[in-house]
Length: 73
Image 1 (tube, one colour):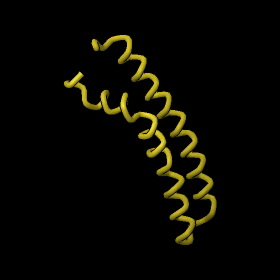
Image 2: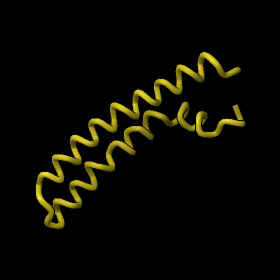
Image 3: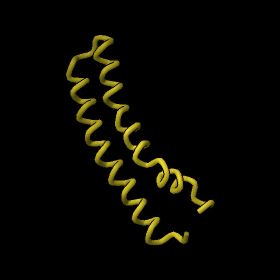
Image 4: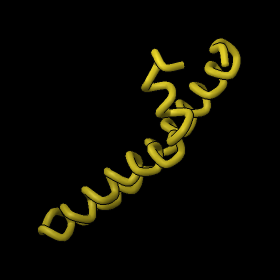
């Protein structure tokens, strides 16, 4: 599995990576709301984070299934 570093990374740190990336829109919304943007930017950031979390978690699970089924150990 040395020739697939991205898959190895997702297998090892996939859940943490998905959570960290999913928190980016909500943190951007908080920063934007703090600097005077409309409060709906924060709501959009929360909604975007929820959608992104679901998509990334399903992607990580899909990579795990494919790695378990097709990759030699």
